[in-house]
Amino acid sequence: MESVFVGIDVSKEHLDVAVRPSGEAFVVERNAAGLDRLITRLRELSPHVVALEATGGFETVAAAALAGAGLPVVVVNPAQVRAFAKALGQRAKTDPIDAGVIAHFAEATKPQLRPLADEATRLLSDLIARRRQIIEMISAERQRENRITVPRLRKSIARLVKALEKELASVNTDIDDAMRGSAAWREKEDLLASVPGIGSTIARTMIADLPELGRLGRKEIAALVGLAPFARQSGKWRGQSFIAGGRKAVRSALFMGALVAKRHNPVLKAFFDRLVAAGKPKMVALIAVARKLLTILNAIIRDNRPWQTA
Image 1: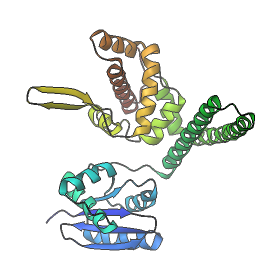
Image 2: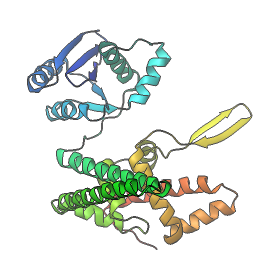
Image 3: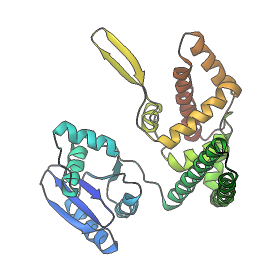
Image 4: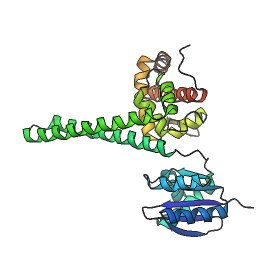
């Protein structure tokens, strides 16, 4: 019996569904009744994979409902799907076409199934993302303040910064409350923060945005975050390796951790200094430190053991 692959294009109002290899296609509304219809039909099909694109949050409810019904759901990277569509020569773009491309992508690549974040973890991720946004807004306003000399405008900026700082304090309180509400999260935070260079902000970002931590091998987790180097070579030509894709928020947090660790973590400082002494550019060495830091954090959660210097 042929394996069945389902692609779902998610929009605000509805879900376009495509099935391979049968070519079946249908649409349901993105509400409780529509999801019930979708679950009933998919259970009849017994699919190998049900793939949805990450669409900035619209996919969350659908993915959670399907996973809760015991269906094999995976949320795929939209950039990879777009690249796949280009490789197929598919230039037209409509919701039904996109659903078909997603199904084809799932059939061709057979993406690995991973547990989806639960509701509490999604809430924590949203809070941490909001904290990051507020900090960026405060930073942008302070940069504007440095360029502006008109007193009235400077006062306007000061009022806005004060309001943003108040909102930041409120979000920080919400994050603290969420962390205190989960003994498992507190234990994970303590384990991660035992590593020199990892503070509570980075630890909480890892908990919220990388629930796979400790469940994958070092190569898989590095690729998931976007810290796995891509080789560039052809014949005798050797280009510089690079990193790309992955989870930007986690990668950015790890870079911040690497900046601290290369100065204050004895193991990672020695690793960084050794790479620089060998002629590696400092940015390349920093990326390597971030990747090694991720490997260490992955092992700590996997083994449930805090950082040990010896």
